Each structure stands twice: as C-alpha cells, then as structure tokens.
Image (tube, rainbow, N blue to C red; front, side, top):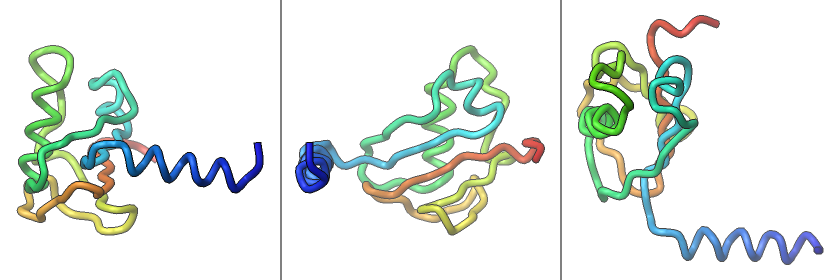
Length: 103
C-alpha cells in the first residue's frame, strides 16, 4: 500500500470516530486502570471532573490516585494540577502522571 493511501485512510478513521478526550496513563495509574488509556466522550469538562470520571472506571474500590496526587499534561505540553478548573474539550489529549512516579 502506498503512503498516500495510508494517510487518507488514517484521516478517514479519525473523521469517522466520535470526538472524545483521549486519556493516557503512566506509572501505577496504568496498572490500576489495567490499560494504557481510554477515550471519554463527555463534551467539555474540567480536569478535576475528568480525574473523578477516570477514578470511577478503575478496578477495585480504592484506585490509589486522586485529584490531589496526580499531575495532568494536556496536549503534550501544558502541565496542570488534577484538582484544577482547566476546561478540557473533545480532541484534547491528556496524560495522567502520579506524583509518586519515579524516573
């Protein structure tokens, strides 16, 4: 398959997929969630609401992360507090990183 076709198909898949906030996980949040990421289709929401939504999807009754011990990286650049009021919209990409993650 030629490059042009691959690019066109990739664009078509993106256009056909429902708009959502793409959420990726790092460290023990990824372990708790059992996946590398999820998509959330809720339109517009605050960072704090997003973290609460993700916590509600976690395995078990005690997910081990909250608004108060998680950093949020929005669109591969802006770092915000998970308890913040920064608004997220469909199409945003979010990375959740626990404070306790080593490096």
